Length: 473
Ligand code: ADP
Ligand code: MG
Image (tube, rainbow, N blue to C red):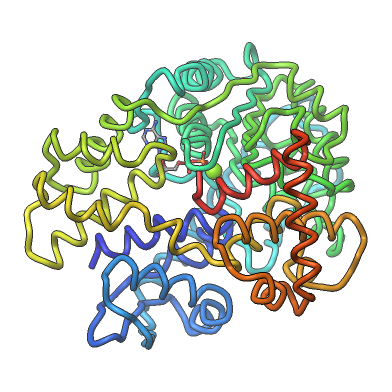
């Protein structure tokens, strides 16, 4: 059950934002799967409601895929231990926060010029994970495998961690999905804290930065927000900065955050799925700042690196893995580390469920059916979701009849990818895009195809990014 859930989670993780994943799925456990009914353990009833409306389809889809059993029903089991775990996490975060405040108050005021002192603990944004460092304990340097594809990014991360705020500031890491950006940035945070236990390290996604900022504005807590991110922070790691595309006000806030930290020699680490200049709708002054320090890319890992990653993961998960089996998996899955790990976990689950040893024959046999799954499984909704993420749109806009280019262009791209990859009929696609006429879909596909033929950069990038997000490439 443990491997089955881990492997389902590894798929789900790629489909949700890190923020939502950590809040809604990480605290959940799989209790059992029997006769088409899956029992999930949750910290409290609220999880049942929220997951049912937001993530249940995805969970069931990946569970039935992983296990080969069609799961239709869900039972919820409220598990106090999980709630206690969440509470402990919150307590710890609060303690950390208080310690931090206490330390600050002892510091000479030159270090931290502040407004009136307020001894009450800062209120947390509702439904947000607690305000701890945000670091994921699993992502460290010692379980990060280094190869030619990530050598530069790794070396720069180690250097930034060993003397934060000096040489590689800011550190900007970019690369495709599932290649280890989030892992590396977390590793920086852990290393800094290991070397300097009272360093104030904050890791958060750009999405969470945005949400907290908006919340702070609405609740008149902007001073606290600024204190947290500008003043009381030694290392700030912002993951997936491309999320700020088109969000002018948050960009403005981040710009000032950046300046405050930078001029105080605090370390800033940023990740993105593309090179700074390619981030859509990002202010020029931010893009140029991202290049003040070091820009390092991560590429898809080579065969040897993939094998080493598999072995490390197998060791961590206690999955017996022979060298020749590792080779077979590594040859089969080439693009993305998350997928590589997912495939290993799926193999382990399958072996467990069928009482087999993972040997070469078993792996060949299983991979024959396991690997090409993404192409078959991807749905129009996946493509729509990926498109919305890429362009920062709401699904309802994408499916609406609005003709503004900011909406109609992404819609056409999504139609094009759906048609090319899923081979659905034009009328069916029309339906799935909120009841459009089939001629609308036809002309969208033709238009985007034409732009691609002309090598249009925007279209090429969008199509490539969306295909990567849904796992086509
Ligand atoms: P990204 O943020 O680039 O999308 P992640 O950092 O989330 O990717 O990595 C996806 C998964 O692959 C994680 O489980 C991570 O631990 C693992 N991973 C990626 N690169 C490596 C590596 N070089 N060594 C070990 N694990 C890796
Ligand atoms: Mg990431």
